[in-house]
Every structure is written in C-alpha cells, then in structure tokens.
View 1 (spheres, rainbow, N blue to C red):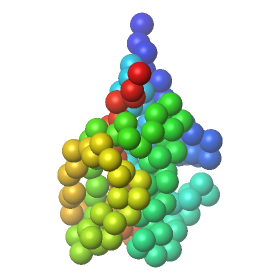
View 2 (cartoon, one colour; view 1 turned 90 degrees about the vertical axis):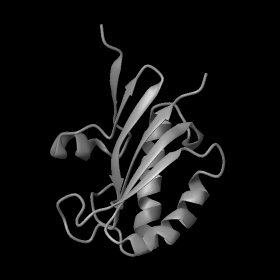
View 3 (cartoon, one colour; view 1 turned 60 degrees about the horizontal axis):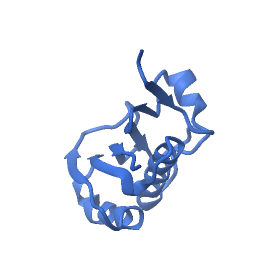
View 4 (tube, rainbow, N blue to C red; view 1 turned 90 degrees about the horizontal axis):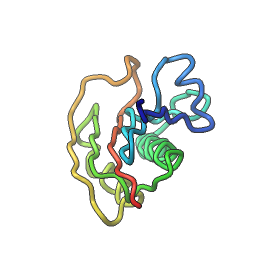
Length: 131
C-alpha cells in the first residue's frame, strides 16, 4: 500500500485537471513540489519581474501549506531563470519567504519556461515536514 498523496490546493484544481500534473505529491513526511511559476489562480501570467517572483513563491507556499507544512520545511530549492540578471531580485524576494533554516538551492538559466513566452522564473522544491 502506497502513502503517495497528490497535493492540490484550493485554486490549483485547473492545473491538475487541465494540465494533468499534481502541484505537489506527499510521500510520508516528504513533499515534492512541482515547478511553480508566476501565474495566478486563473492561470494568467502576472505582470512584472518582482510580481512574477512573488507569485511563484506564493504558489510554492500554498502547496507546502496544503501538505501540512511551512516554508521552513523546505530542504531543497531549485529555481529556473530566463535571465540570470534577475538573480539578485530573486534572492531579495526569496529572503522574504525563507529567512531561516535555509535549504540547499540551485539556480539554473533556461531559455524558456512552461512552453510559453513571458514567464521569467520557475521554482520547484522538496520539503520534509517536521513532527
């Protein structure tokens, strides 16, 4: 018997139903969060670099919290950037969401994200829930 559980937060049902992937999957105390981008719950791209990064972190937070965790439970973070010059801004926003218990982090440059133009960042993570 598997303890694999899809994590589909309120407002992200369209991702699961239309795009056919789980925003997160929990196995035991580990949560694997799919890449989160700067789109709102209407699946619309938000405008502006900082706004996209904030929205991606808000989406990440939503998935981790729906699994019963918090941003402090993230142990591994991977970010994909279409312009590595945005890295300083990304780090500034990241520090608003993760200010202690820093995870391992890898930042990768990418030509395009999600098969659509306009997206500048995608964030995926692994969280280990405490207690």
